[in-house]
Length: 179
Ligand SMILES: Cc1cc2nc3c(=O)[nH]c(=O)nc-3n(C[C@H](O)[C@H](O)[C@H](O)COP(=O)(O)O)c2cc1C
Image (cartoon, rainbow, N blue to C red; front, top):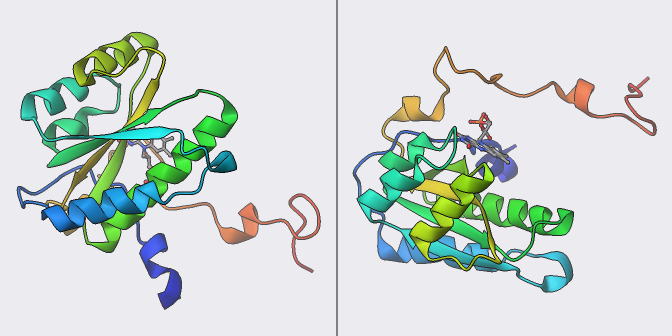
């Protein structure tokens, strides 16, 4: 449906063009993220915008699947106050809102997970993050390099598409099919 097309069409983009992201668009992405709802409205986050190419390259080594950060136009690091389930949910909502806000402007993004703990410490030191805070996610941000950048390569080690709706949704009871 047209009303949900923006949300539905959001894909992970890992190849980026050199095209500059205008400042007003970047600020809109950040400000939309700021408006994310959180548990008890605690807003337990700080954001760091990274444009320095050396820092991006170093961050790209801080997670097994974070290599795309090296080619991003910029990155947004999500610094969280906690590591309990609520904090992780708050982080997920923030992450998705930033990604959707970017996509509303035609700007692609992809999550780079920062792990394990020694990589989190290394990334935290690179960005000057106090040791009592958590850095699990850095988003690559940039215009897609090409329409192909919205598709996974044929040899990608993750499943493509999504599980069918009939499989995902149960009616009245777990996995109960519609009669
Ligand atoms: C919690 C979480 C962590 C992720 N970490 C990474 C990552 O480290 N590197 C990466 O390339 N993609 C990462 N992704 C992106 C997923 O691979 C992507 O959402 C999934 O493959 C669906 O992609 P699609 O929307 O393009 O179909 C992560 C996604 C989530 C939700």
